[in-house]
Image (tube, rainbow, N blue to C red; front, side, top):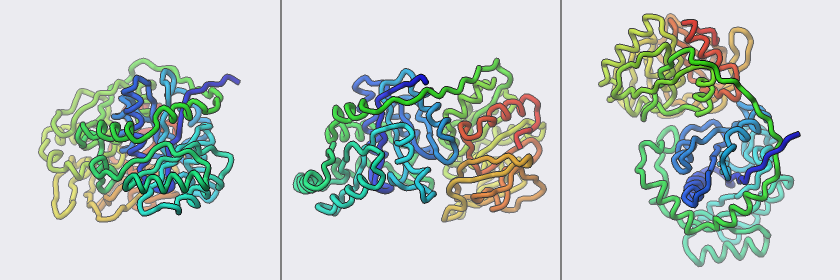
Length: 449
């Protein structure tokens, strides 16, 4: 079997919010500035962290998800996306051993096992000295077949604190300390209800500041050496012959709608879609055969969305004329009659007979399993604070076997030629998605049910 090898590391942590995203961003840009071609990956279904990693490396960041994707698809994607790169940075999610299953199959540690990747563990060391030793010993011994190659201390209060931590680790643990980051609020990324602020809304200087702190606090040269010690992987390549242009597909892509998996867009292009991007806050509807309205933050930008009366009217007219529209989460919200949030109401497109209310707590958050009318099982992910209300006279494409969807029982609102769901689907987990999407637009009716 043919093999390939690329220097790589997986950055994980003992638990959430330890600083692995900050380190991943800073390290990605530091290496990029040094002249390395860096390919980043994010474990899990998240959209926002990959935007930051893409901004740091100047390349699309790709998701690797052990629930939505099979092992072979992950290795194949890793091979495909790292061709031409010199080093890969993989950011884990949650804690190293965390996952929704007891056996750890969906954990970051298992992703490291599948990709034969060394691991760097980030520890939030606030209010901790000698106690870091038993914590690390537990992590080092829990799954001894994986390779934790170093630790980075985060939120260190000063030189004395760092000295005590290093002494305890050196005496008890025998693991290399690769750096210590101080507690610096100025390099923390702000959060809101769906997680971190997207990089497009942040100041352009923040990635540079993070990179500077990481470069000054971490042994980057040693990390490169560790990454270079990764073992070879088998080449598992999925070849898809690109088709000639069959349809023009309008894709809403702006600060309100920015949740798209890059591989989904690539798959649509390979299936013969010419993607035409437009800004829902200021543009008119382009000349296209169908629409793809992804996720995002329509509630945050609902004032500006309402003000673009021309585009809303054009989309509603296109829907009435039978244009196929595929929408996920934020796109579903935009197609409804109105949004109600924080005591304010704003008009949206009105192409779906429903209203949207934004709640204080998540209505749906986590992995989703859907069953189509043909019995086909689809795995995806949802994260929404919104709820569909006053819905009438629609059909549904899917039964929800796991998750919330529209009402806890159904997802995939089917109305006229719209298919709108709360579930985000990834092409690596549902490889027939792109072909079904493009074919449906070409035919002018949805077959993807």
